[in-house]
Image (cartoon, rainbow, N blue to C red):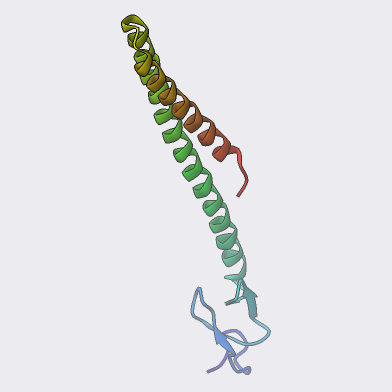
Length: 122
């Protein structure tokens, strides 16, 4: 098979983007893929950069979603703690007060873990 541009040269590969046969002079390797210098090299570089940015954005979005869920659950536990304490003090129930404080501590811990996880670096 001959190169699509240099008809006297034998092709060493087919471009992985446009599938045209390419010789050694027309061939470029981008991220382990052989592409033609003429029209596909820049596209392949752009695709690689775009994919890297998209992967990083997906990590941030995932971390933000996890943080949001942690904050929501932690806040719900803090609200349960608040209303449980209010009820416990009105009934003078020591056991219920202890349970409410434990629930509050869990809620606060969950909030702190969620925020710390969001700001930690991978």
